[in-house]
Image (cartoon, rainbow, N blue to C red; front, side, top):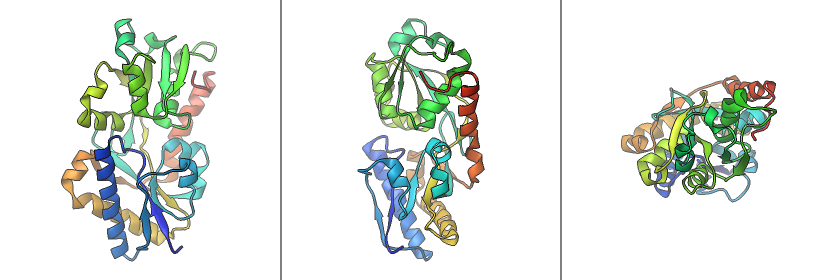
Length: 274
C-alpha cells in the first residue's frame, strides 16, 4: 500500500477536543514513520462517507470504531484490533466503560428517578449501531420490558450530544450516554448538561477499539501500538484534557461481552430497543 488514511472520529465532542485528537494522531503518525512505518498518510479531519465504509477501507492505517459494529456487524473480520483506550472518567475502569442512564428535567420532576420509573416514557438514542446508546440501554431495560416494549416511543438523534439536547428541550425523556462523552462535555460545556439527571450506569464493556486495515502487516501493527504510546506520553496536558490514560492490548474475543449483552436482552424477549 503506497498511501494510507487515518482518523479519530469518535470523541470529537467539541471543536477543541477534535483539535486535540488531531494533534495526538499527528504525533502518532510521526512516531510511526520514525519507526519505519509509511510516511504517506492523509489525516482525515472528518469522514464524508458512511463510517462503516470508512472503517472497511483497505488503506485505513488507524481509526476508532464502536464495539457494536466491531463485534456485531462483521467489522472484526476486516480489521486489525490495534488497541483500546483507557479513560479517566466516571464509569470507566481501565479499558472498560459504561453508559450513563439519563433523564431530562421534566421527566425527573414527574418522578422518573429510577430506571423502572422510566417505563412508558419517550427514549432518545444516537443510532441503532451504537453499543453505548442502544445496546447497553437495551440490556439495562430488558428485565423490565413487557411484551417486548418498555418505552412509549423512540427517537433516533444521530449523536449523544443531540440526545442530550432532546432531553434538555423536552423532546425526549430518557437516554443512555457514553460516560467518556459525558465527562468531556461536562469539562467543556457544563451548561449542556443543565437539567439532565443521571439515574445510574449500564453494565461495563470494553471501550471503543482503535483499528487498522488487515492490509497493514502485523509487525507494522505492533509498531503502530508503540507509536500510540509515544504520542500519548508526548503531551501530558493534552492527555489530561482528553481524559486519556493509556492504551490496552486486547484480543478480539474481549468484545464478546457486547454480543452477550445483546443476546441477554433477546432471551428476555427484548431484541429491539422500543
